[in-house]
Length: 142
Image (cartoon, rainbow, N blue to C red; front, side, top):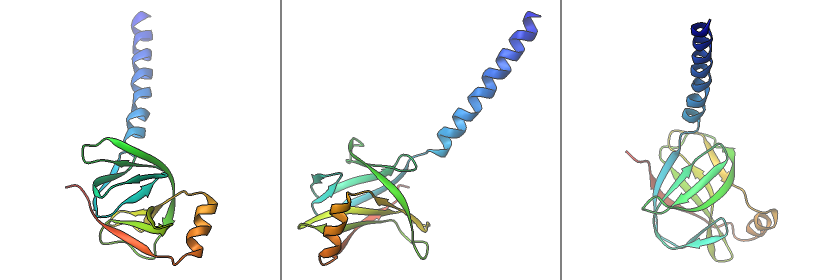
């Protein structure tokens, strides 16, 4: 009887571990490395030009990391659809109040990107301005 209880316990334990590994695989980080040649804003903070990583760590959470991999900012996003797949990754910055603000992140080979959430007042202010768009050269890690 003890062996049977032990077998059932081990079966339940192993069965419970499988979904955990599946969940971890579904939320693998997706990284875009970029050399951003201008000051820019992410999550209300200003960052200098330099080498950064933009990492999608979950379905709606985006992290900005420095060249050493330290997290500098976290922002929430939602999906946006492009008319076609992109050949290469792209970071889109809109000009707001004379600053470049990260607004969209696009990975290569995908037609779905991430739009950074911003307060409604900030979106309206950008729409009323010239609508200047800046992009940064980005690449995937190999």
